[in-house]
Each structure stands twice: as C-alpha cells, then as structure tokens.
Length: 82
Image (tube, rainbow, N blue to C red; front, side, top):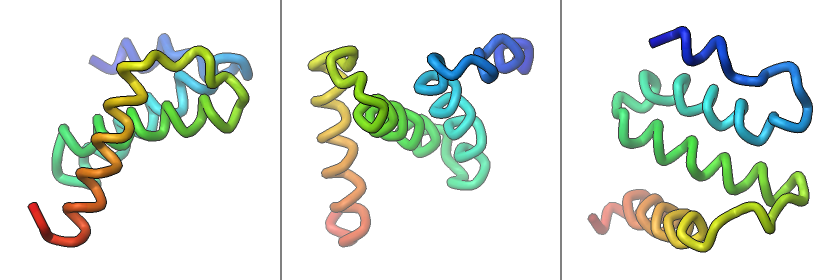
C-alpha cells in the first residue's frame, strides 16, 4: 500500500496540487479517526490548492459540487445540526 505513496510526484513543483492533497489525506485519516473524513479533507485541499495556484479551469464541475456539499456538511457538523 505504501508503494503507491512512493510514486507520488513530490519533487515536481507542477504536481504539488496532486501530491499535497494525497499526503494530507493519508495524514488526516488517523488524526480524524475516520477514513471518510480523511478523504473529505483531501478533496477540499485539492480544490483549494488548485484555486490558489491559478489552475481553476482544471477542476471539473462535479468536483465543485462535491466541494460545496462537503463544506455544507462540515458547517452543519460544526453546528451539531446533523
């Protein structure tokens, strides 16, 4: 399973929008005590890093929908509504 982590392009600056969210997903899974929360964190960081790096056009419409739904879920979880 860790062989896939070795294949991530950590050293190339152009691929940091892929490798950083992957790393954050792996790290957040044990800290959040949830695989699902780790994946949510990785997807949110992917969209945020793409926007900050000026690569907004590379984000698919489905990813924007998922991003908004995850933000809404996190806000509602924080308010203890769900």
